Length: 132
Image 1 (cartoon, one colour):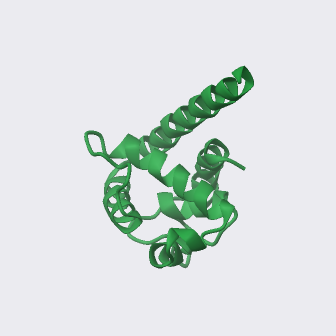
Image 2 (cartoon, rainbow, N blue to C red):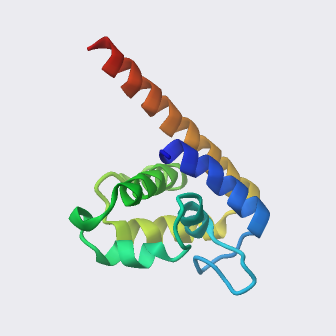
């Protein structure tokens, strides 16, 4: 599973479970964008609470792929902001607030665009690797 797969799968999670705002998930089962990312990556919706607290050196490979997907999504919803290197806690707060304010269609569009960027980056990396 890579960032593109997670971003694409998260769209299905949102469509199946419904979208909420302000929480990774609510009792009725609805999730926000970050909750959907987590589920698509094979985690509980609130995995972000732990990832915020743990130092990156303690993350598993799946954690890194999930966080990569989150940064790609944030690039789509925080135009003009340099999200590369942004602390994860700030990214979750800032991108989460923006995503919560968006319509479901806008959120799905952001996921689609982020997945496209992830796919293009993976294809370029694969092409570069094959050339060496």
